[in-house]
Length: 147
Image (cartoon, rainbow, N blue to C red; front, side, top):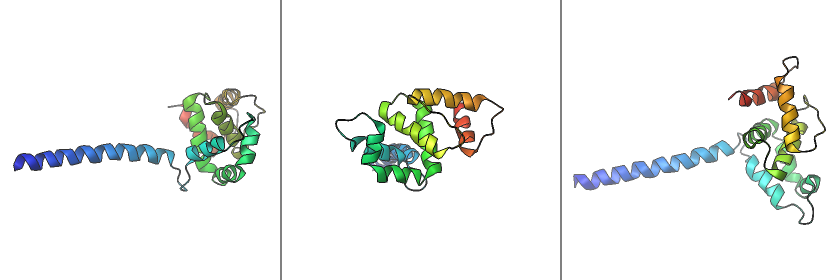
């Protein structure tokens, strides 16, 4: 009888531990205002026009979703700049959309980029220049780079 109780307890601990890890990962992607920027970007990409590779066509096709991201600037910026840095802007269309969102949200850095990688490289240069005046978005991005 003691063995059965022990097995049930150990099994329960393992089950709840594994479930907790998955929830932690989900919570990382979920944003404070109950938006999930990653899922919203996926929606924009998946609902885009089949015959276009122009990012602005994808935005136009899902303008409400894009606007919702812009309506939550802090949460959106924290997700998109983090993803850009983590992937080194290597996620194609998703990275390009993330770079556009960064520029629309953070007006402190202006740059007419050709690719998401181009945006990220120049934004990093901007952040490393100690003579610039940084806003909260810049300070957040800089903290990510120092990790």
